[in-house]
Image (cartoon, rainbow, N blue to C red; front, side, top):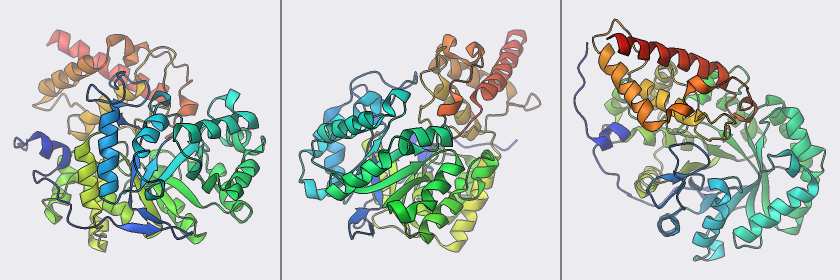
Length: 447
């Protein structure tokens, strides 16, 4: 068996020991109205908390502590000083606190120095009415301490199917109302983020001449570029999404450039390919450069809980070094390796939570994926490291997830499935992981 050398924590996470350096100005892109937007966008979904973790929604590994306003203020100040001017939030992020916190942080800076993006996150049926939608926008404007929203999105178009999309935005007259808001200037740019049913995306594109979308937010990375349909046949490959938008001159805003962090974690097989081309670049930097190489990309969103993430991402795009065709070919080889590692396409968005039976769905999937990426799964009983890998996997699972929130308590109700933007068959995956864990525990007892 091939031996693996000891590496530092930083090298394990990033694939490099060299600290990043900001060597030039942030790369800027121009939208269809002449606004200059930073290629790196600050995503406010996983803001830092006072206990050093991050705030999102419900997972056990996510902090329940208060958001660290001072840390967010520092991040925003540093970002603006280094050319980042696009800040993306939502009334649904960070247990409903993200807009308020970002409003406070941004209020210390001139309003014309940044662009705010937020969303019509009317996910619950009681929020479908036009009056409820109007209230959501009014609340966002108040929380963000502004008179207008620069980029306003129909949030997660297609998630839950076309019928849900229709109820949220078409049947209630919400889109027509938003067109009036744009005309009045309370919304400067109107767009949508796409997750889910391809019919919803196609409908939006077919109606572009009527609505004149100013932008569209899509999931794009070097795995989903050609392989999203391999992960789930209902997906649309990012290449198709990007090229469709480019053909309509609709700027693309990118979410999940790192696949929920999976493209930032050290993987020996992938790293050997990337480090051979540039030993000093982090694993994550390749993913950002991939997205930035395409000219119709307006900005690339990243949820940066820690300042070190912010510094590294700024360094990667200050300025952008576009990928060569040879480098793009190597990333395609890396994508194929990643697809072979048995991971689950969970991006830790946590829209599936809370589970009515208390299962920590994203925590279980994250634990599984970490082991896959670290080449510890699947655990082969014929391997000389079988016992060691089994012990590590079970110990980490039990340390991170309470036994009452582990897969064995999933009853397969399926309430989570319609909320998953990646359309993972969550009950099926939970059952498979439960059987796998049960077999490992049985082996451990008889070892």
